[in-house]
Length: 429
View (cartoon, rainbow, N blue to C red):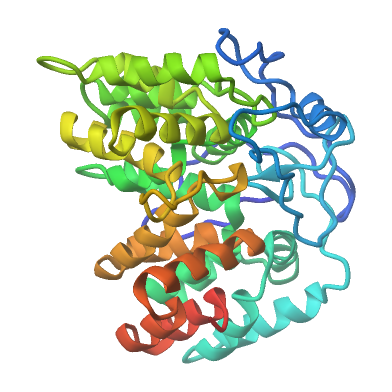
């Protein structure tokens, strides 16, 4: 798809041209390289090819320690996913997505009136004034495939970049919500990283939330999209904006060498990882490399098993130990990974999480923190809402912890077009 940025303050640099696109709605080959076959848990190596991973998930459910870790993947959103060069659906952050740059566009959402959506969005911004309610109604209802289709059709029918047009007619957090919806999951992550590293200072929280605890295929897709969009390698941009040992942490994360999600935890390796983490925080100083090596390379099920074993063995939460012994951005990043593996409550009656529950309680807490920072709130809501089933669980965790729903808090603390747009994304509860 043609990149939907235009005149906004954070428009990308000119990148390489995109390949010739097939007729709209055609199936494009998936261009991204994948890492080679993953070795068993505890051995060096990169992740398995996603097609092999998918086949292994379907063919076997190996026994796991503690019982119940393999409850099966969450069902995907009902949309016609694009197919890669080997016939497999493209997914990003657990949901089907259209091919991001540099790939040609994928198939449109079935049943979507693309022409009608384009006309209504264009009319809402034509002439003097802007019809913000129509923009909210049209844009905030788009799924990733619909957003991709609208961005492509808008340029061909109106001769304008729809994101650039929205940026010129709206402002503030309302603009930010609309931009995120139009970009879709992959390009919004790329935009978030670009903005986090632009200008003076770094938005370390944004880098942490977007880049850590991601699957190998997510990392590879994001790196390709970032390069195609901004004309620079993602690793170099991040490395140049960080300092000291934090560079090494993010270099590990961006290597795409995380153990594949289908590989279960084993008691021997979990105990060895817990010992490594404990020893990295013993005595004077800390061994950042050892801690990063464990937390950046283990998959969700393994991280959950490690967090539970650490609590059982040492009588305290792994996140609390990391918080006490590390400092600065390194501490925030490691705690972010560890908290994703810990249940909302840490009492004796709490149960280890299922792999698909990784990060739900943590993300619910981050939503509450975001109400003091509109940029963070938009980022957290918009990144989380695409996976509809997981989003229901995040909102339920928010309500359980804060005794009122996310939508209710938005209504009480936010107003105007920004409130209406955020509520349209959040849903009724």
